[in-house]
Length: 445
Image (cartoon, rainbow, N blue to C red; front, side, top):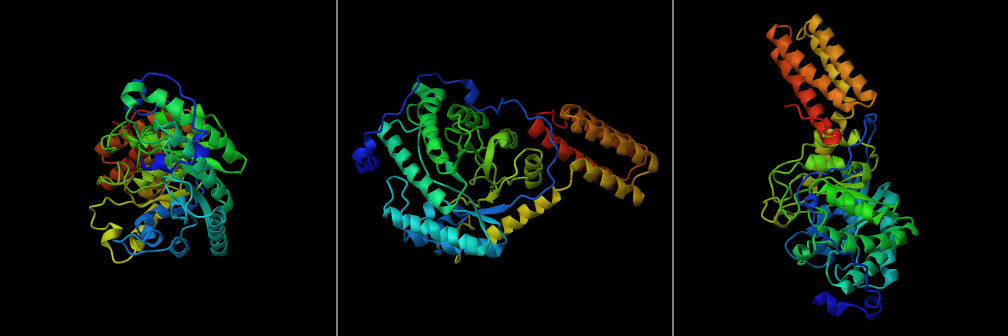
């Protein structure tokens, strides 16, 4: 009701957005993506610029911006300065942290005042040598009320203008929360009829301003990779991609991602990804599972993605390390996650087959691997690399499984030490997991 009362009559006049009838489909309910898998491509051994999503300071910035109590305040500009000092190469400046932003209304400050702050952000980043990797604004296009969806269109047009003024190349947008009439109409009718049309309209608006849109999977109407990719297809605009949120893939209408194969979904959207949200917990902030960063970045390096890797640190409300419980903003926790990410990016930089080959050489030099066994295993890993290079990841995976069998035989014959067997098996099994994520080959049993 609050939002309805705030609508402007001019916006309400544009409220009628097209709707399409349809039926619910089991394909959207909880399965991982059935999108055709990508073909093998060269493994990327270059660098990825790491960005700080300022939402990591959400409660602290809101303590400054809105006078909220319970957390030590920090300004948006000071959060940007921290990012530079901590070693980030870019920042993602969510629109929420620009004075005048509101989730429910048009901006609460005059346009020029908002734009002036956006220019101030841009100027500060240029002065510090930081890039701006993206921004975002909240919306709900699954909302049944036509007028409320129309308001969100007008709101997002304004924040697209701000993104262009600030120099943000990508703006995050959302599908919307699962609405009350989902059981009546089904996912497809709502996603195709309500969500896609306004995003298509906004894509055209953003294109004229040199801004891309990124549809973020968010555990709502975009809970799975399949759902997110399908909406992207219905939008059908070249300047719209997917924000690959590593902490929000889950079965449709599930509260968390526990028990779900989120790595497969993260990999499935990589061909469509134009920005990231790298999070510590893949099943959700309220869970205890931590992301296997080496596996994540190996998967990313197998893909065509070459953009920013924004990090977003989140907390459950009851965590003792929640910023509301701290006497200072969570600088150390953010820096700690950055260090872990940088370490994983460094470890995954070497081409995996070369890394296995180098490990074989080290074990042969130390006497942990006999010469005949070294020759057999080196031939096996090179065969696996060859199959991958010619675009046959399934056959490459078969060769790697043969490699594991050979290790077992050589161990039984006493021609490889236990530590060498364990280390090599771990490397190959990790590579097989990434092949399963990215290329759909069978897991290593």
